Every structure is written in C-alpha cells, then in structure tokens.
Image (cartoon, rainbow, N blue to C red; front, side):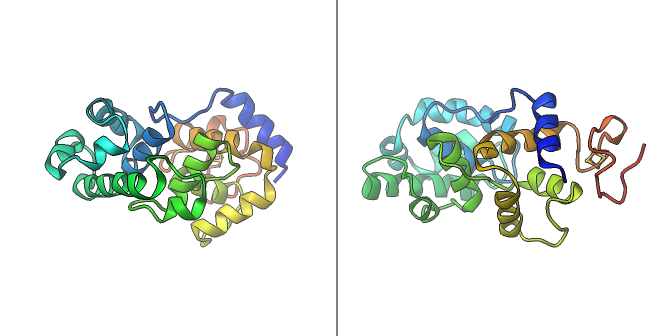
Length: 208
Ligand code: SF4
C-alpha cells in the first residue's frame, strides 16, 4: 500500500470527517462511546440528548437509578447493561478521579464498560493523545486494502496501523476510514465501481 496515496485520497474523499457522536465535554464523549457498542451513532445521539439534559455531570449520573437511566436509553441495544455500566462508571469517576475523566489509558480501561477501543476514542478525541481506535469499519477497510490480514485480532490491526500510518495522521485518518467504511466500502455491496483503491484492493469479491 502506498501510504501517501492512501492518505491523500481519503483527504479528498472525506476532508471533513469527524466523530458523529454528539458531545460537549470528555464526560459526555465517554458516556456516548460506551453507549455506542453495537449501536449506530445516530441512535446514540437520540438518547444522549435527553440523558445529558437529565444528568449533567458524573456526580448527577452516579446518583441516578437504574430504572431512570434505562428509561432514557431503552431504544438502543444492550441498554440494561449499558445503564448499569454508566452509573457505576460515574460513581468511580466521582470516587477515584475527582469527577474528571482520566487521561491515562490504564485508568480509562479500568472503568466499567470501557475497553481499548473506547479508551482510544476518548484519548484521541477528548485529549488529543494519538491513538487509533479499531472498530468494525477500520478493521474491514484495513483487511480489504491489505493494511492487515483477515485473521488478525483487533489489537494486531491497531499495531499494524500504528506502524504503517504516520502518528500525526492517526486522529484524522481514523475518522476518514470510518467514513470510507460507512459510506463507500460498505460491508455488503461496497461501491467498487467508483472506488479509487480498486487496483490495490485485495477483497476477493470486489467487482466492477
Ligand atoms: Fe472496498 Fe470495493 Fe474499494 Fe475494495 S474496491 S476498497 S471492496 S469499495
């Protein structure tokens, strides 16, 4: 893969790619990302609109009842578990982190419902720490374009991308790869007809 070509092409296709989750501070971003597991950003934005109005900070959410939080987020998948996680997570922010979202990966990953991907999204988007979150889109694009192998784990894909892509580009290219996966190289029926990467793509079912 010619990395400069890859980056320039994504820049042309998606110059304004950015997070599609709505948030106004690191706490809201953290909650939104936890809620986004196996759910679209659009669906999350619908529920966080009222959730963030009702609970403005970790302290308020830490005092919420399970039932009340569930009533705000019941339209998204796994809402019971997610409600439990975000209440407990808020308690831990209040008790261990002075109601702030920690900037260290280990502290983030110790919070309920927070895995490596969520930690990467928060570190890069809230605090500007270079980190590349590998979600379903990034993973699929990486394999199809030969940046990673089919059987690589998410962590192996992340490490390969970290090695191959320049650090300063991680934040932007992460959003651009998500956009490319969401709007062009879809899981089913990718738009190969108009794809600038057709000649280098390794996807066995690509077709024009
Ligand atoms: Fe995706 Fe098709 Fe482009 Fe390959 S050629 S990257 S499968 S859209």
